[in-house]
Image 1: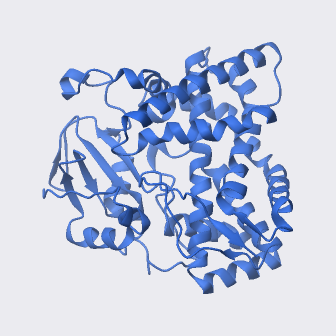
Image 2: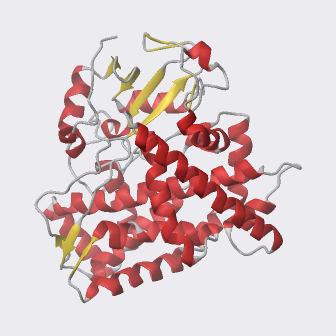
Image 3: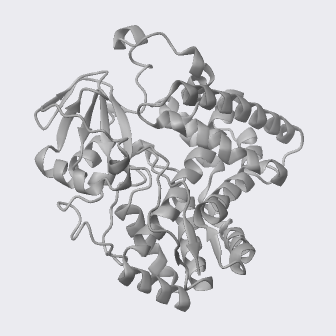
Length: 408
């Protein structure tokens, strides 16, 4: 296996990673990065296969100790963040993952998500009402962020007066999923976990005494074969739902709008479909926008047992980096991969993952994106980007924007 360093945090790469990913996908589709100490995979087939392989997982310390992995002692700066990681379903493997996901799905049901459709439509209209007469807004702060944060907050049962706390907590926590985070970011993320956990714990206690029709009440009550979520598990999975439940939607909204702005023919299709109220069109269009510019471009997996993949030895304790953004543009899987084809008939993109860790929030993210794009372009058909260059927040793993000024 060849060795190569890909500086994924280089601002030029974050701004437009696709030319470099296309080059590497053909020349060096698998390589070991000695700086990140990970094996990178860039082709769709490899990523999809490894995501489904249960010999790889999101965590490793349930199999190997820190000493066996050659890791230093736990960082005291991230003690509470590490405890949070140990108790949510995303960073656990079976049987704990199976148990946690089963309990969460009993509360986070398709019926509960579908029941949000009308509320999401009203929220979208309200956000547009607030900005319409001004003729401009920041699509990120005034539209893309408030919608999914409000939806998740309402779903969980967070009172309106406290919702302003959620996005700042989440923004600090997710910094630790980037490669090469700073000591200050570690300290801020840990403190955010402490504050967020205390808040959710107090809210859960309130719901135990006085249940309401919200997800926290349901999670307090949910039980399967005599098993319940522990208080720490309930807290950790509520935080996970907020973080995972809006990051993809926020970044998917701004990245999708940017993609449309740069593709005038596709933009006209969207405007016409919005004017005609073509719901089915927006289902296809959102899948294509999620493929075309992947909002969460890279996920990692640990090798849980020695295996050989296509002649490549993967050793227990190694980490692999799966480049969703590259797989989603692989010409071996997608015809005209660099074309924004809004009615693409087959679109098995990797954006929500595959296998046992497939995103349980995918139906909600899809519903939010379909609704927000459809109503936005119906209400504001002349909306357009009001800047020559959009800036990114700095990291590639969670590739978000600093702002997105628009006008109409």
